[in-house]
Amino acid sequence: MIKTENNYFAYEMTGEFINDGEWIHPKRVIDTYELIYVKKGPVYIEEAGIQYELEADSMLILEPGKEHSGYRKTEEKVSFYWFHFYTDKKIPFKILKNGDCYEIKQLLKKLLHLTNTPGYPEYMADCTGMLIFGELEKCAIPLKSANSALAVKISEYVRINAKKRISVNSTAEHFNYNPDYIGKLFYKFFNIKLKDYIASEKIKCARDMLISTGLPIKHIAYELGYENENLFVKFFVYHEGIGPLEFRNKYCGTHINNG
Image 1 (cartoon, rainbow, N blue to C red):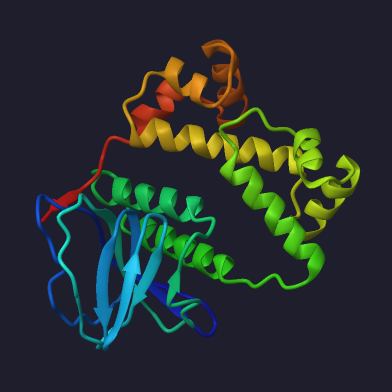
Image 2 (tube, rainbow, N blue to C red; image 1 turned 120 degrees about the horizontal axis):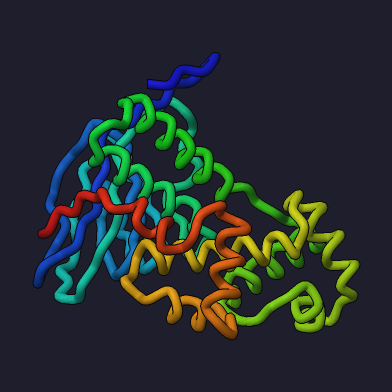
């Protein structure tokens, strides 16, 4: 458990669910909060009489003491991370769809790895869980001004098109603005240079494919818009400090429960 001056946070358990044939979420009441992060949907969950339909990259936070269950069967293949935790901190949102959830997805993967790999101290689960909660809070921060709306649109454009050959100049051209202007605007609202953000999103795509697929490095390089494998490897080593194959091999410990 992690305690701050006025709040506490404690990890309980986590896992990854993948259905096997027709499936519906069981009816139950739990004494923890539960974050559900859907990797492949749809997932149909009802809590306290309210129904939620969750597609890929949607998140739902279920609350302690409230009955929840599936309200509709699915024969499609679905998968999601589940993460149980205790806290007296304010829950940042109930449901979030189509957000920039990459960091949360990767932290959940990391949490699965360290909780199912011998040798990690128990406190690391609390620390990683707290990081996940912090990312949830970040996702909930509203940006309302016109300039911030443009900054968000730019970030979404980069995130969606990270696999393509994008740059600051091509992004500025897409939005019909001067590259210097959108660069300064982006830095003002996100405290990161647009060039660095583009690189970070490309790295996220690379990490995701390395961890979640068995695609050859050469194929991943091609998917990310690199002319050859060596250019991609140099890019990855520069940003990560290790090669893509070594990075992939780090994430071998996971726990999946099948329904």
